[in-house]
Each structure stands twice: as C-alpha cells, then as structure tokens.
Image 1 (cartoon, helix red, strand yellow):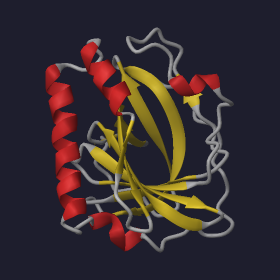
Image 2 (cartoon, rainbow, N blue to C red):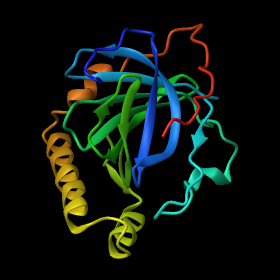
Image 3 (cartoon, rainbow, N blue to C red):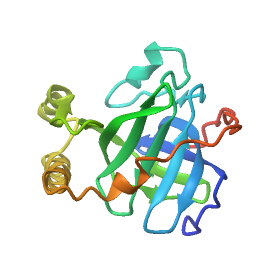
Image 4 (cartoon, rainbow, N blue to C red):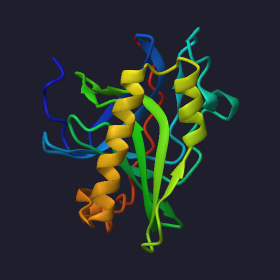
Length: 196
C-alpha cells in the first residue's frame, strides 16, 4: 500500500495530517514520479478541504479565506526522506523564484502522499538575489508553545541548514525544473473529500 509510482497527468491527493487526522487536503496533478522525485502541479483555483478539528494547532489558518488555491499554479517538487519540498512560483506565467516549504517528509499513500507543513519557509528569488527566510517567528512560537517537540524543531532546523548549504554551494537539485511550465489545457481537479 502506498508504494506504487504515479502516472504522469494522474490526479492524486496531498494531505496534511495533524493529530492523526486530515488538517487540509487538496488534489494535485502528477508531472513526474521517478520514485526518487515526485513532481506535482497545484493549479490556481484548486479546491481546498479542511478537517473539522479540533486540532492542537487550531483550525488551518487558510480557513479564513475562500477555500481555493488563490495564487497562480505552482510546481511542487519533493524527494523521499527530505524534510522539505521546493515550489516553483510564477507571475503571469513567468518564473519568479523558488519557495522552499519545510514539511514532514512525504509518506506515500495509495492515492497520493501525506505530509505536514512545519511553518518555516525559504524564498529563493529567480534573479539570484539573496535568499530570505519567511515565518521564522511563527516557527519559533509554535516550538515555544509546545506545537513542535524539541526533536521536531531540531529536524526542521537540520533540513533548513541542508538547504542553505545547497543554495550557498550553487547545488540546488531543483534547478533543472526552472523552465518547466504547466501544459495548456490542464483542467483544475475537483474537490477531494476527507477520508480520515
């Protein structure tokens, strides 16, 4: 269960699991799955489904907005065992940079994969200007308030250090995807019901 490779163009499910239950769920379309890399596309307008809770972190912060992916579509790249994924971001179809999303390593399921966003993010502008951290204060507060154990927080910091080492060494494995764009005609997948 959960070990098969997904086919290109297949719609699969990305679930954020908190307290053993679905915190947020949405569909993504597979771009490539080699086993060593899972590349998926999150389309603008994709419906987001939120678990009813209660959760120790409270409701997902995006429940305050319309339950759709508001921004332009993004390419999400994740590798087994990595405590992060790398998202290609666009404006008007032009690549604007990489967004490193620190998260629990993906766990494949029969229908997609599970993870959990861990607050901290790193922005890598397309023009090569210096990287910037995002949500450091949210991450620190989540740890301080007990939302992350010391071990979980340490794992996020270790993943962050490994990404910085790659960036500063000009060795980002994700760079080969810089010129990728979603094909014309890809439809926005429909809503995904909660299962957990």
